Length: 297
Image 1 (cartoon, rainbow, N blue to C red):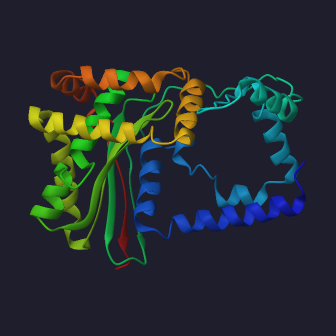
Image 2 (image 1 turned 90 degrees about the horizontal axis):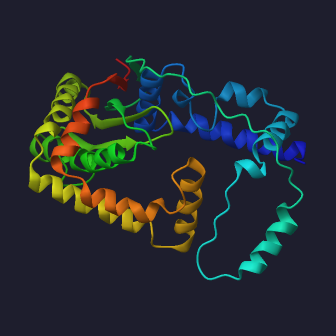
């Protein structure tokens, strides 16, 4: 059971946290991009929820959601490292053994079409921030996803990426620029973000679109460097037993199997530049959407 005062304390904390998201310029632009891209899809909204829904939720609704969601047939527990298997089993039986399996209401798999909107709001900020993106492969489209992870790193994944070198180093238009590939269950996106002086808005958006298209002309040397960088990020996720356990549980739950992290490197190694280009060509520009904030005039 949840005590009413515990629910109220957490409610206030989450409401304050949600409101703080809009105080960060980049996060504010990203929130608007997600609304512009996802439209009425649940992914358009913050994972934490909305202020108006948090203000109305009751302790009884929290308990009902907990009992509906935290059921054995919707759980995966992973243990990594050195441990006594029998001891772990006894602990699990003692702590979780009384939880009864129930029918779990999986969300419907609706067909998704990007909203392709342009949402620009004015706020009390000094610089403009823009997030521009389009549809990308989902989490379960493994080969396509690996290709996009490599291409994203070539586009805006570090200090030697195309966006960083062109927008910051060559043109001096921004101090923070990069790209994000977000592989989700279902509709997903690749986006580029940038903070800059308001007078450069059209210039920056034009450059972002151009660099999205230019990825189709990626050279072999750049591609291999991006693959090496992607492999390094992947290996970094294996550094602790806690991260390993998290990976095992996550991939088992989404349906790729707990052993998928050990298969990922093979997908990455076997990916060719020609394959990556062909995959990217299917998605580039599809459902392009824009979210931005600008200073109040």
